[in-house]
Image (tube, rainbow, N blue to C red):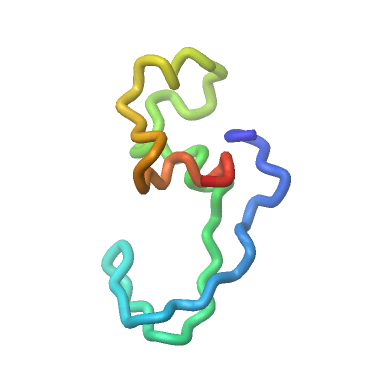
Length: 76
């Protein structure tokens, strides 16, 4: 699911406040689409992202209960 999500873009969300994400200003009321396909392949988020290594979840410092954006492709 990480590399081949059933939907590459999450359902649209609406910003309920003015926020800054990745250096971009997102005004309140804007529709926001999250590209989980790109997050799943981002080398800044995953070491060797295209390599199939299920054991990465045993050794990585992924916060399964927190707000770790690397888990978005899994429905987090």
